[in-house]
Each structure stands twice: as C-alpha cells, then as structure tokens.
Length: 91
Image (cartoon, rainbow, N blue to C red; front, side):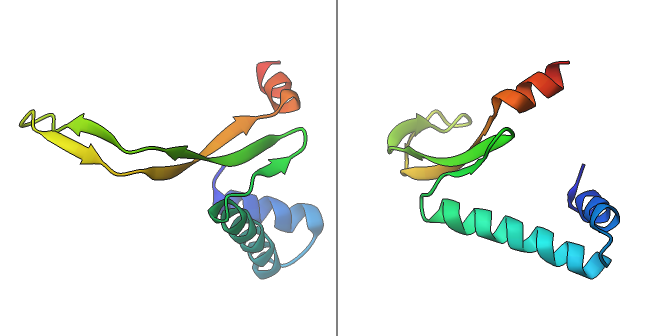
C-alpha cells in the first residue's frame, strides 16, 4: 500500500473528500516526522513503534580505492513491529 492508496481507503471508510483524507494523512505523517526529529519515540499500540538510533563516528573504507574514510555520527529512523501486527502477518 502506498500513500495514495491509504488516502483512497481513508476517503472511502470515513466518507470524506479526497482532499480531506490527504490532509489527515499528511498531518499524521508530519507529526510523526516532527516527533522523531525531536528524538521522541512514536508508538502506535498493537501496530508498531518508530524510534531514532544514534550512531557514533567510525572509520570505514572506500570500496573502490581501499582508502580509509571517517564516517560522521548520524541518526537513523527505525521501525519495530508490535505483537499484534506480527501475529496478523504470520497467520
């Protein structure tokens, strides 16, 4: 399912216009992204949680030249599925 399919499903299920459904989905995604950018965990009970992992700086190698390269510290978003979602997918 992609974003447009999600908007279409919301439009049909909630009996609202496509523009309203698109706005709801965009508000949802924007608020999730804002919370994660502040370092907050986003948890949707029974479905999943999103959180940010911090990675320290390390020395890597350029695969072409073999030259050592310093990799800067970074933060990356992660997804963890909930128990109910795991059961639903597995059945």
